[in-house]
Image (tube, rainbow, N blue to C red; front, side):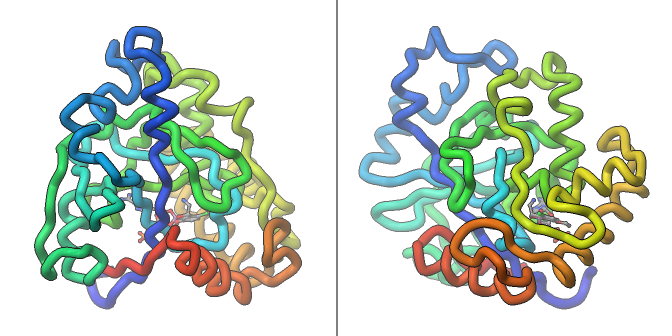
Amino acid sequence: EGVGVQEYTGVKLQVLLDDIKAIPLESRDKVKDVPVGKYLTSPEILAALKGKTLYMVAATLRPETMYGQTNCFVGVDLAYGIYQVNATEAWICTERSAKNMSFQGLFGTARGEITKLGSLKGSDLIGVPLKAPLAQYSKVYTLPMEGVLATKGTGVVTSVPSDSPDDYITMQDLIKKSAYYNVQSKWVEPFMPPKPIIQTPNFGNLAAVAAVEKLNIKSQKDKVQLAEAKELVYKEGFYSGVILVGQFKGKPVQEAKPLIKEYLIAQGLAFTYCE
Ligand code: A2H
């Protein structure tokens, strides 16, 4: 890219802090021996968050796919912060994106200023339950992804395995190597399979799954084929796809895309973010 501006939709996934707190530290699932949500439910962070709803904010190019969210991805070694947005909200994202958001007037601070309430690593977020807007699952979990770039978007990627080959293959890798990745089975398939959300003429209603199978992609390491799958699925979905669920069911993707984005923004669950 290099030139030009990329317009993303920032999507707010609510951190279910009360759900985490309800389980005593000693009986929580563990990630590398650390209880899930330990950092977020520490007394200092809970005090800093008092009266605020905490969200993880993901940057997506495909807001029309939010009906198919099954989980959220972070980079385990990436640095994230908790940033105060206003009196009632705090967001988790990279510092770089928080500064950009502040410059874009998304925070209640002077432009370019940020108020950081905490610092954490992606590994502190693994297993954390979220409420993802429009998702058909009432709760989705935060999982590790190797390719998450600190230099793009918010460093948080919401996962739609039905329509994103990257998301689908990452989920397959996590299932195969769950011990290595410290992933609990209840966070992934078969409990959270991809959901059909867009019908396409050539790739059926789980276009990413069909493309991964057609191109015989075996893991996240098959970069060339994954790039091709991404292109194929994107074109098929955008130009010939029809939405299968929700309030814009039956509409072509091209028509539904801006409507779904506006709907999320009107609900206070999304915003426009550029970089
Ligand atoms: B997309 P572009 Cl259904 N590192 O959202 C790696 N990938 C990132 C990222 C980061 N820091 N931030 C965002 N992304 C992902 C949905 C989707 C996406 C679908 C299909 C394709 C697709 C659900 N995941 O992206 O380099 C996000 O995933 C295909 C490229 O700016 C975001 O949109 O073009 C997209 O990559 C932005 O990538």
